[in-house]
Image 1 (cartoon, helix red, strand yellow):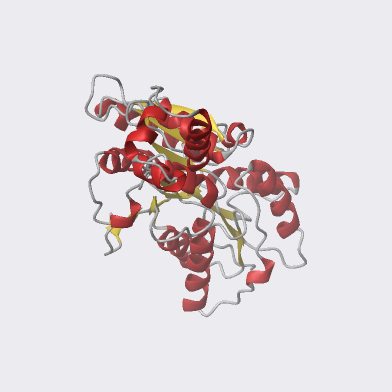
Image 2 (cartoon, helix red, strand yellow; image 1 turned 60 degrees about the horizontal axis):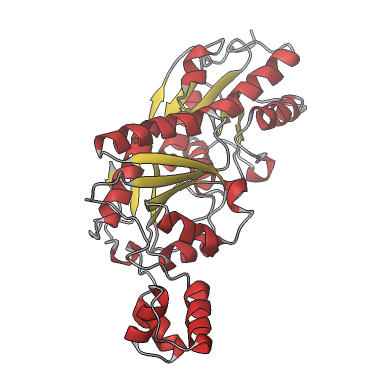
Length: 353
């Protein structure tokens, strides 16, 4: 496991306090407390003002929230994802559930589309009131507005390989994507391939940028031609792999090897090759990324970069618990090591006699 050398002091959430509500309303903390706790002795106009300010700031009182890090209630962690239909997310969820069970807590899952139906602040308040101790985001795009809302209610958030590189005060967990891209491409070069295409993930995604640069570094180290404008980017889906695979393999000089940004994308590339009558690995070698169950159940079995997805899920859960206890992390960014797993989808280049 590799980490940065920074501390994560800024990653601890700074929730909105009763004192902040009182200051903005121009009243004493005692008066604000009466309103928040439903007691009398406060004029109706002042009461409405305090309630409006508390609602706008996202204030959740200690009495209202159920934050049982060490209490009798079971601590809950919200895990938000774009979808739970792909092997990567399911594997990560498996690791998260295991870690939660070990910590005597539980995972609550939610799709990102469900959050979009309410304001980030209302969502964050509901989580705080519902016993959440933190949030894990496995989403296509980091939202600064969601992060600010969680900070207001005092809930930590841990990102798993977000599409953007977030600001440095946030905590994120992922894999050594650059090293994985480098090793995948080096493997194909060592097999004699020189015309190697990369079919990428979402454009601008931090993990895809790193994998692209790893691919680029391996090609340049071998003095091989590379044109990054030819890289086709898209979601980590079978459909993207199929569409991009058909396009790349229909070029006047098609590649003899393809590095795909994910296993599910590699499955789409395999289908494209079958559609065009191209044999794997006889005429085309393919390497994926993730090492999900697809890799060892495909035909042929997929050579891929293993990233410890379950361990990433476990680490994210452990990190949420650490932050919820108010402890300082040694690092804001945790990267877990990748490695190549060679199976049947790659083979030495066949030279024309």
